[in-house]
Length: 316
Image (cartoon, rainbow, N blue to C red):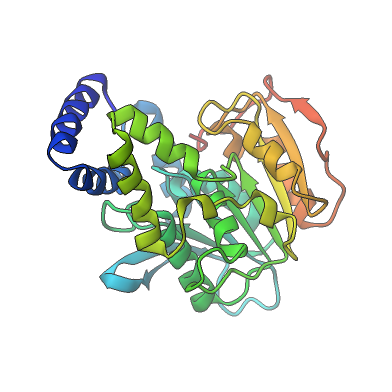
């Protein structure tokens, strides 16, 4: 949020919560769930988006119906009657979309695997400007219902967290995704810190903050503290590969360490030097994912720096 806009927002919430903390908390939740514009902002984002959309132009495009009239768009690569092959689900981060995941999708699809790239509501080709974790998990469940079981699911940032929330069955009214393997890339292990940072940013007091966080329970049926997927990750039947960079400035490396402490079902691969966004299409990361999906031994939890290696343009 720009400095001027943030200042105006803080003033507005100061006035509103003086009148009614409940109204301020409700308004804060709506703002928290408001997604960025789908149109790329800035030259770098525009160039990456154009490259990704050009690669995806021949993919099959499908809309999945969700509750309340909402819809989620998916790109399907290597679909149809092509014989038995692996099927992978790909999810993106907040403010992103499949156009920015094209390097990863291309790598997964290169040997004929069917790849389903899911644009969450309010992102990519999906309509609207509203998303929360419950809605993201609903979209994942809709993709599984439409395409069948996935051999693996790969998600970046918020998308990786949504996969873990789905797989661990945190939301009782949603059918969990059933996969053999999950890959998270730069993903948070719990969600409370986001609400704390957001409330602090817009200047919420304790009463309004409590309303903001309580809204999570009213929407999803689970309290905010329940959205901690690190410990349940160690009890999953699925194998989990967590990829993170210690120089990630958006999602701290301690989230990967929390996953790593969950148990033997989780393995961490440190891709230092790629930060939060360039990590998606970095060649060492793509190679590690390929090794993990193919049951080959990867680098494990070894810390490796890849600062000097090139990154393709389609990775924002």
